[in-house]
Amino acid sequence: KRWRRARHWMISGCFLVTRSLFAVVGGNIDTLSGVYTIAFLSVMALFALGNAVLKYKRRHLPRNFGASWVAVFFGFAAVVSACIGNVVFNPSYFSYFAIYFLATIVIVFFMFFRVRLARVLLFFVSMNCGRKLCCGTRFGNWLKRKVNSLKGTPMVFFVKHDQLPVMNKAIQYILDNEVCNNLKMVH
Image 1 (tube, rainbow, N blue to C red):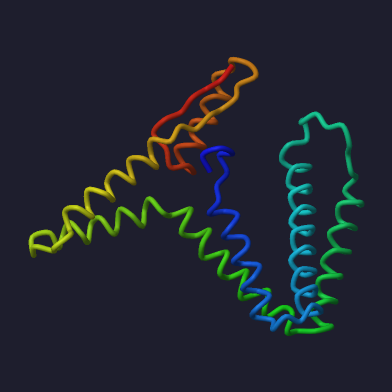
Image 2 (cartoon, rainbow, N blue to C red):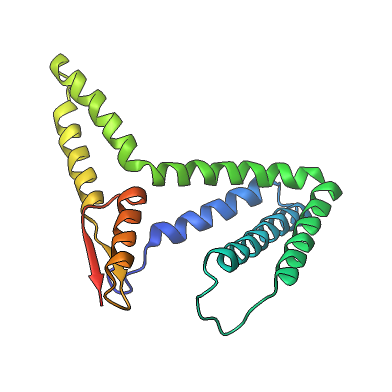
């Protein structure tokens, strides 16, 4: 980590998830390929949905390549029908996929709401500090530092022109959707 500045816990985490899936399916390569097929087709469906949202919401964005609405709809329909075909072909593939998908959703949920969850935990720790928990104050102080650290992480917004309505919209979005007290605008 010192030399390459790599996050080895991410690499190890990906390896452990992949290895655990291999162990759960009992080393059956057909099942493993079916699970990865469903995952890949699901990602492609999300790309098609994202393309449609960008076409609708951000029509004015400059693009080098474009796709018509018919092409986006056809691509989405083809990917969804392929995914459904794989699930119908062998429903056990979907059960393995669903287990790992739900685990991923739980992890993402905790990442999105980690500050709120830490505040709830801090509330319960501070309620019990009067009862002389052995590590309540130490744990509470550590939790406060973590919340402040998360909120102190700067959010960077790149501004092309100095248009106040655009900057105000960005600030409102960050206040509504992000956990930060530090905003940097780069012109």
